[in-house]
Length: 147
Image 1: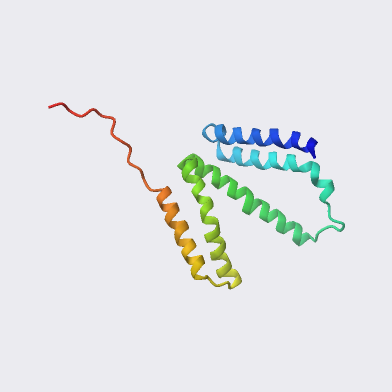
Image 2: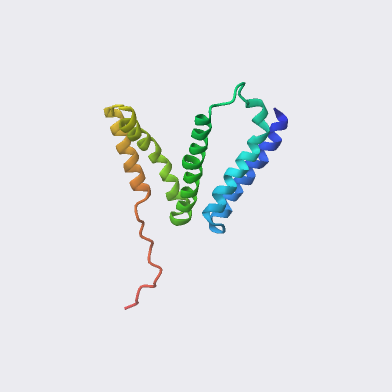
């Protein structure tokens, strides 16, 4: 397992540096594609260890491809555009909304019910996100006129 650390740790450092530098210099499509290709290359050596005994059905393969393209690739593209538009601090608050959407999809498609605790937690998430994204007034830098 020590050998694997020598591959993973530099890769993590590499992607952290790219997250700091790239959003201001590269289009969001390039960043999203690079992130996904890089992650795929890191995981590629593990593929022989995780192969199933029987091949999945064509429907299963299509579902995995759809999830990869629609859920992951599209989300990355939107996320990096959001970082470029709002800045990293405000864009990170989008992640707090994931449980709310999951709760909503569960109600809509699975017939789940919302408990009082879930509603209260959702309200706190919305309040925290609103506070984090509220417009801030910058102090004036113009000198005050002397009388």
